Amino acid sequence: MTTESLARLNDISNHSLAGSGVRTVRLMLSYYVPRYAEDLHYFASHHLIGLLSHIIKVRSWLAADVISTGKRMVESWNRVYCGQTTGPLCNSGDAFKLESLLRDAHKEYRRRFEDQEKMLRDGSFAKTLAAAVSRMCNATALEMCDEDVDEEARRSYLLGQDVYQSATSVLL
Image 1 (cartoon, helix red, strand yellow):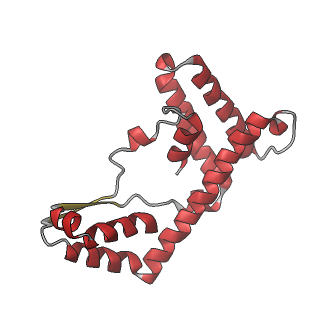
Image 2 (cartoon, rainbow, N blue to C red):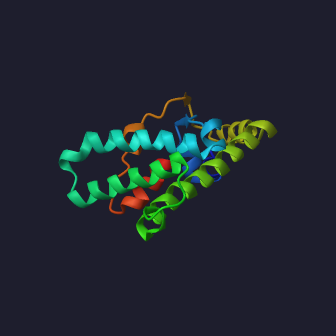
């Protein structure tokens, strides 16, 4: 739930062809967890566990260089988790890039969490949703899910043309 996704719903509902063609509106009410937004330590812990389990699950069919990148991610993110900011590995370009990936993703996660909370506090989520659905004259169903039905696909930290881009999409 982000202002961007809400704006996309609003744009679709305002479009004469797209809005009238909608039959079902499906809301994925996955929310940003306060503890992860507030504390990089917990955010890193959550993604370390996810990355490790992903590597174990798919290691037999990933290329060796991708597995190597995954292992370097684990090492770098573990340093962030443990609060280590000095040492020879912390200053290497690759380690810095991998740590920055996690830190930047945490900043974006925090921004999205704050955005989510603002939408709930000021009522803009409910107002925009109600207005958008009311404009979709042929919509006959509104489905709300509080679980991510595509979570397994989103947990693919290392599966993509660009490993860094894949990992970033999972982190958020």
